[in-house]
Length: 188
Image (cartoon, rainbow, N blue to C red; front, side):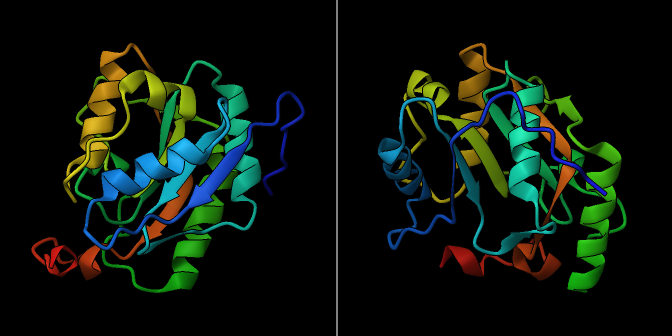
Protein backbone atom coordinates (compact mmCIF):
# COMPACT_ATOMS: atom_id res chain seq x y z
CA UNK A 1 0.00 0.00 0.00
CA UNK A 2 1.26 3.48 -0.87
CA UNK A 3 1.62 5.67 2.22
CA UNK A 4 1.84 9.45 1.54
CA UNK A 5 4.95 11.26 2.79
CA UNK A 6 4.00 14.85 1.90
CA UNK A 7 5.14 16.41 5.20
CA UNK A 8 7.72 18.86 3.77
CA UNK A 9 5.99 21.24 1.43
CA UNK A 10 2.43 21.39 0.21
CA UNK A 11 2.41 22.41 -3.44
CA UNK A 12 -0.67 24.02 -4.92
CA UNK A 13 -1.59 21.65 -7.72
CA UNK A 14 -4.51 22.62 -9.95
CA UNK A 15 -6.02 19.86 -12.09
CA UNK A 16 -7.77 20.32 -15.42
CA UNK A 17 -8.87 18.48 -18.53
CA UNK A 18 -8.17 20.79 -21.47
CA UNK A 19 -10.67 21.45 -24.25
CA UNK A 20 -10.81 24.20 -26.84
CA UNK A 21 -13.58 24.59 -29.44
CA UNK A 22 -11.10 25.93 -32.01
CA UNK A 23 -8.76 22.96 -31.40
CA UNK A 24 -6.14 25.37 -30.05
CA UNK A 25 -5.09 23.39 -27.02
CA UNK A 26 -2.07 25.64 -26.39
CA UNK A 27 -4.40 28.62 -25.95
CA UNK A 28 -6.37 26.67 -23.34
CA UNK A 29 -3.16 25.71 -21.50
CA UNK A 30 -1.99 29.35 -21.47
CA UNK A 31 -5.37 30.69 -20.32
CA UNK A 32 -5.43 28.16 -17.48
CA UNK A 33 -1.85 28.95 -16.40
CA UNK A 34 -2.64 32.67 -16.22
CA UNK A 35 -5.32 31.93 -13.59
CA UNK A 36 -2.87 30.23 -11.20
CA UNK A 37 -0.87 31.75 -8.33
CA UNK A 38 2.83 32.34 -8.97
CA UNK A 39 4.26 29.15 -7.41
CA UNK A 40 1.43 26.81 -8.36
CA UNK A 41 1.58 23.66 -10.45
CA UNK A 42 -0.83 22.81 -13.27
CA UNK A 43 -1.73 19.20 -13.95
CA UNK A 44 -3.19 18.74 -17.42
CA UNK A 45 -4.68 15.32 -18.21
CA UNK A 46 -6.18 14.44 -21.59
CA UNK A 47 -9.96 14.10 -21.89
CA UNK A 48 -9.58 10.48 -22.97
CA UNK A 49 -7.37 9.58 -20.00
CA UNK A 50 -7.73 8.92 -16.29
CA UNK A 51 -5.69 8.31 -13.17
CA UNK A 52 -5.77 4.67 -12.09
CA UNK A 53 -5.27 5.21 -8.35
CA UNK A 54 -7.47 7.06 -5.87
CA UNK A 55 -4.65 8.82 -4.04
CA UNK A 56 -2.84 10.22 -7.10
CA UNK A 57 -2.83 13.72 -5.60
CA UNK A 58 -0.86 12.60 -2.56
CA UNK A 59 1.60 10.79 -4.78
CA UNK A 60 2.09 13.82 -7.05
CA UNK A 61 2.72 15.94 -3.95
CA UNK A 62 5.35 13.46 -2.74
CA UNK A 63 6.99 13.36 -6.18
CA UNK A 64 7.24 17.16 -6.28
CA UNK A 65 8.79 17.14 -2.79
CA UNK A 66 11.24 14.37 -3.71
CA UNK A 67 12.36 16.23 -6.85
CA UNK A 68 12.50 19.94 -5.94
CA UNK A 69 14.67 20.87 -8.94
CA UNK A 70 12.15 19.51 -11.45
CA UNK A 71 9.89 21.86 -13.41
CA UNK A 72 7.96 19.44 -15.63
CA UNK A 73 6.73 15.91 -15.01
CA UNK A 74 4.87 13.38 -17.10
CA UNK A 75 3.55 9.87 -16.43
CA UNK A 76 3.63 6.36 -17.81
CA UNK A 77 0.60 5.06 -19.69
CA UNK A 78 -0.74 2.27 -21.84
CA UNK A 79 -0.93 4.14 -25.17
CA UNK A 80 1.02 7.09 -26.56
CA UNK A 81 3.45 7.63 -29.40
CA UNK A 82 6.45 8.06 -27.09
CA UNK A 83 7.60 4.51 -26.39
CA UNK A 84 9.50 5.23 -23.17
CA UNK A 85 6.20 6.27 -21.57
CA UNK A 86 4.38 3.06 -22.52
CA UNK A 87 4.06 0.24 -20.00
CA UNK A 88 4.87 -3.00 -21.75
CA UNK A 89 1.95 -5.32 -22.42
CA UNK A 90 -0.80 -2.76 -21.78
CA UNK A 91 -1.44 -1.31 -25.27
CA UNK A 92 -4.23 -3.76 -26.18
CA UNK A 93 -5.80 -3.94 -22.72
CA UNK A 94 -9.32 -2.48 -22.66
CA UNK A 95 -10.36 -3.67 -19.20
CA UNK A 96 -10.47 -0.75 -16.73
CA UNK A 97 -9.99 -3.12 -13.79
CA UNK A 98 -6.71 -4.38 -15.27
CA UNK A 99 -5.52 -0.80 -15.75
CA UNK A 100 -6.42 -0.02 -12.16
CA UNK A 101 -4.54 -3.10 -10.98
CA UNK A 102 -1.49 -2.10 -13.03
CA UNK A 103 -1.68 1.45 -11.66
CA UNK A 104 -1.71 0.24 -8.06
CA UNK A 105 1.14 -2.18 -8.77
CA UNK A 106 3.32 0.54 -10.33
CA UNK A 107 2.45 3.05 -7.59
CA UNK A 108 3.42 0.61 -4.84
CA UNK A 109 6.62 -0.48 -6.57
CA UNK A 110 7.97 2.86 -7.85
CA UNK A 111 6.36 5.30 -5.35
CA UNK A 112 8.15 8.62 -6.12
CA UNK A 113 10.83 7.22 -8.46
CA UNK A 114 11.42 9.17 -11.64
CA UNK A 115 13.62 8.97 -14.71
CA UNK A 116 15.28 12.07 -16.18
CA UNK A 117 13.94 12.47 -19.73
CA UNK A 118 15.19 16.03 -20.26
CA UNK A 119 17.49 15.04 -23.12
CA UNK A 120 15.36 12.22 -24.50
CA UNK A 121 12.84 12.53 -27.35
CA UNK A 122 9.94 14.81 -26.35
CA UNK A 123 7.21 13.55 -24.05
CA UNK A 124 3.66 12.71 -25.04
CA UNK A 125 1.38 15.01 -23.09
CA UNK A 126 -1.29 12.61 -21.83
CA UNK A 127 -0.31 14.13 -18.47
CA UNK A 128 1.66 17.33 -18.06
CA UNK A 129 2.53 18.54 -14.55
CA UNK A 130 4.16 21.95 -14.97
CA UNK A 131 5.29 24.60 -12.49
CA UNK A 132 3.94 28.05 -13.30
CA UNK A 133 7.31 29.75 -12.87
CA UNK A 134 8.78 27.51 -15.60
CA UNK A 135 5.79 28.18 -17.85
CA UNK A 136 6.49 31.91 -17.42
CA UNK A 137 10.22 31.46 -18.12
CA UNK A 138 9.39 29.51 -21.31
CA UNK A 139 7.02 32.16 -22.62
CA UNK A 140 4.03 29.83 -22.38
CA UNK A 141 2.75 27.06 -24.61
CA UNK A 142 2.81 27.13 -28.39
CA UNK A 143 -0.59 28.21 -29.74
CA UNK A 144 -2.61 27.75 -32.96
CA UNK A 145 -2.09 23.99 -33.16
CA UNK A 146 -3.67 20.82 -31.82
CA UNK A 147 -0.67 18.51 -32.02
CA UNK A 148 2.93 19.15 -30.99
CA UNK A 149 2.14 21.32 -27.97
CA UNK A 150 3.57 18.67 -25.63
CA UNK A 151 6.75 18.32 -27.72
CA UNK A 152 7.18 22.08 -27.80
CA UNK A 153 6.93 22.53 -24.02
CA UNK A 154 9.47 19.73 -23.55
CA UNK A 155 11.95 21.56 -25.78
CA UNK A 156 11.19 24.95 -24.20
CA UNK A 157 11.75 23.67 -20.66
CA UNK A 158 14.96 21.91 -21.70
CA UNK A 159 16.24 25.00 -23.52
CA UNK A 160 15.66 27.08 -20.36
CA UNK A 161 17.78 24.62 -18.34
CA UNK A 162 14.79 22.97 -16.69
CA UNK A 163 14.48 19.38 -15.55
CA UNK A 164 11.90 17.00 -17.04
CA UNK A 165 11.07 13.76 -15.25
CA UNK A 166 8.97 10.70 -16.04
CA UNK A 167 7.05 9.53 -12.96
CA UNK A 168 7.41 5.72 -13.08
CA UNK A 169 4.75 5.11 -10.42
CA UNK A 170 2.00 7.28 -11.90
CA UNK A 171 0.11 5.21 -14.46
CA UNK A 172 -2.54 6.85 -16.64
CA UNK A 173 -5.08 4.81 -18.62
CA UNK A 174 -5.28 6.44 -22.06
CA UNK A 175 -7.90 5.57 -24.67
CA UNK A 176 -5.66 7.12 -27.38
CA UNK A 177 -7.74 6.56 -30.48
CA UNK A 178 -8.80 3.13 -29.27
CA UNK A 179 -5.26 1.90 -29.86
CA UNK A 180 -5.41 2.75 -33.58
CA UNK A 181 -2.56 5.23 -34.11
CA UNK A 182 -3.84 6.01 -37.62
CA UNK A 183 -7.23 7.22 -36.30
CA UNK A 184 -7.27 11.04 -36.62
CA UNK A 185 -10.95 11.56 -35.70
CA UNK A 186 -10.01 13.79 -32.76
CA UNK A 187 -8.49 16.29 -35.21
CA UNK A 188 -11.69 16.80 -37.22
